[in-house]
Image 1 (spheres, rainbow, N blue to C red):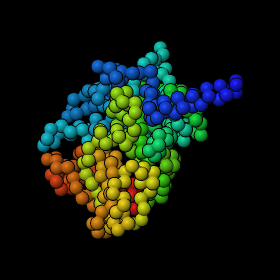
Image 2 (image 1 turned 90 degrees about the horizontal axis):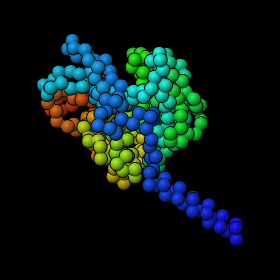
Image 3 (image 1 turned 45 degrees about the horizontal axis):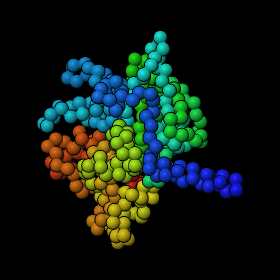
Image 4 (image 1 turned 135 degrees about the vertical axis):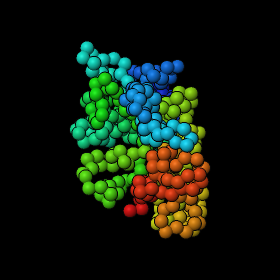
Amino acid sequence: MYGVSRFLLLAFFSLASAAILKADPLGLVLPTKNTAIFSSDPSKFYMYTNRNFEGVNSKPWEGGTYGFSRNGKRTSIGIVNTRLHEGIDIKPVSRDSSGNPLDSVRAISRGTVVYVNSTSSHSNYGKYIVVHHDWGDGPFFSLYAHLSSASIKTGQKVNAGDTIAKMGYTGAGIDRTRAHVHVELNMLMSDRFQSWYDRHFTSKNNHGIFNGFNLSGLDIAALFKMHKANPNISIPEFLANHEEPYYKVGVPKNGKLDIIRRYPWLGRNMNKALGAKSWEFTFARNGIPLSVSPSSKSLKYPAVTWVKSMQTNHSYMTVSRISGTGSSASLTASGSRYIQLISEGF
């Protein structure tokens, strides 16, 4: 009788655990004790950047936010920030008497450590960690940068909230006063990144597929807020609700797309793929792919097939991946490289 009761009890807890995971598929927590992102004063959460715009120096906290928050340019539609910041810069909650940050850095969700860069000079990120998360919608990777030290190793399993590092100020352009942790949540663009890298660069790639060029950052700040309001949300639902299409690119069809194997939810009308002549990618302004559809258009080279009409140059709005104005646009050199990477057309 005791054995049956114990079996039923274990079964109950197993079902309860499964229900919890299903109810909160991402299981997100903030990466430090700083919770001001949910407050009425976000300046207490984000680390400022040093800015000089038209000869005026400032230290805006907005420079630490995700998105087009840096490198302002005066245009026909007003001042536009042209540089994409793919993560969030979180300021320390506590420092020692010398001003060094004391904050621990924690995993934002359960996952596996897949990369630890312990050599500051190898990256603008300084010392950084990458954790792989499998939430059922393909591989996603959280990145934690500018660390003082890491306390985990590659291959180690972590749970949400586990300490993985100590905040620091390693990497280019950061000093003790601006110590922070830069946190991203990324999609992986290609499993064959090294082949693409060798085609375009001569310098050594020290980071394998976890090089920043191969990681495309989601709006993690918006995700934290949306998850707080709705713990049931998935990444595809988040992107559908948060991002808007900005441009589309047609790519000659040369077989199956590996990115759809990784992220099947990107595929649209895939039942028509067999007779298609090209693929059409839809991108958000930040370069995140939102969908991929088969197309009957015959193309020899990748080309912009649609763009949101804009009075100013599209290069200012898209990290210079496309250029042109109004409803006309074309791929730039960097845009062509990006399309090569994401479609593996190399």
